[in-house]
Image (cartoon, rainbow, N blue to C red; front, side):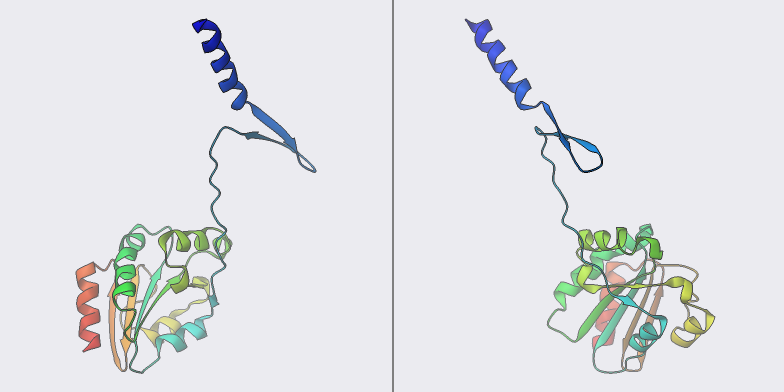
Length: 184
């Protein structure tokens, strides 16, 4: 009796996990009905800015503190510092502070990898796309004291006429100190 019940149970389990084949218009697709497939939501497109728009933004001189982080999805140090910025976004949400991430990734992944990365990192509402190939020496000389575009991450801060630049990874402590200094 135990053998019959056990055999029936195994047969039911196997039939529940069988593969089903469904046909689409031009190809056939196999689905495993026993697996839990989690489909990621489609990431929304990110705004694209030009070099001129970016220069205008970087040059804003008012009572708002503008923190601009230039990064790429493939850059390990860039990814490491994102949590520091996210923490500051939350901490300073009621103050005159605007934190923006400028992706310098290749245009080929603007519609795919970059929006998904921004969504996964929780920075999609603070990220814009900039074609780094359009940035020339004049762009860098006109907007920055130190940065020539040769390396990322790079963080630029401006409040009024005062600026701060950090080439390379910025620690949470450095970010906190620089923001506090500029908010005085």
